[in-house]
Amino acid sequence: MDVIKAAIEGEGGEARTGGVKRAVVIGAGYIGLAMTENLHERGVSVEIVKMADQIMPPLDRELTTTVENYLRAHDIAPHLRTAAAAFAERPDDRVRVDLKDNTFIDTDLVIMAAGVRPSRGLAVSAGLELGPRGGIKVDRHMRTSDPDIYAAGDAVEAEVEVEHTVLPGTWRIRLAGRANRQGRVAAENICGRDRVFESTQGTSIVKVFDMVAGGTGASESAGARTLGHVPHAQRDDAVRRRAPEAVDAQDAGRWHTAHEGGHEGRQGPESD
Image (cartoon, rainbow, N blue to C red; front, side, top):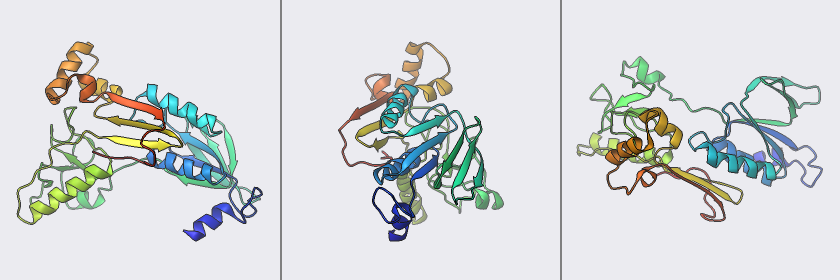
C-alpha cells in the first residue's frame, strides 16, 4: 500500500513531483466511482470514460443525472457514450487515451474498471450447462447440471423465478451479499444439509463524496425490459404478484434515492 501511495503522491505537496497529477478511469460503476473519489481526495485531476449514456447503469437515468452533475461540481469530467479506442505511450512517459468520439486525453495513470463478465471457462470445459444470460446454471441448492458440482457467486445464474425477488426470469446480480449467501447455501448442501437460496432484491448503495445513491429491486428500465411496455397498472400488478408483501410497485422495487449526507461512511455497494 505504501508503494501505491508513493507512486500516486510522489514527493507530496502541490507539485506532486514524481507522482500522478491526472488520471483517467475507464468505467463508472461502483469500483470506478470509488477509485475516482479516492484519487480526487489525493489531489489528482480525474476524468471518467463510460460507454453507456449514464454512470451506474443499474440505477435509473433520473438518479444518475444528479450524481453526474455532482461529479462535475467537483471538477470531475465524465465522458459518456464513448469508449477508449487506443492507448499510446508519450515521450514524456505519460499516456495518451484515444476515445472513440475523437477526444484525446493525456494522463499519468489509467485505471481499467469496466465490465463484469463471468469467468466460466472451467465450467464450459467440464461440460456444465449455462443459462440464457451466460452464467453457470444452478438450481435453488446451488447445484449445477452435474449434481456433484456446486457453484455460487457472480458467475452463476439461478433457475427461473429463483434469482430475483421482483422480476421474473433468470438474473446475474453481481453483489457481494448475494454471493456470500449463495456460498453459504452451497457449503451447507455439500455438508449434507438441505438449504435453498430463495432470491435477492439486488440492494446496493454507493457513496460519492457527500452524496449517497441507492436502489433496491427493479429499476424502471429493467422492469420495462422484462415486463414489457405495458400500462403502469398492469405492470404494477405483475410486480405485486412477485412481491405480494409490498404496498405498491414502488415498495416492491422501483425505488431509488440520492441525497447528500445520510449513510455517512458507506462506500461501494451494499447488498441485501
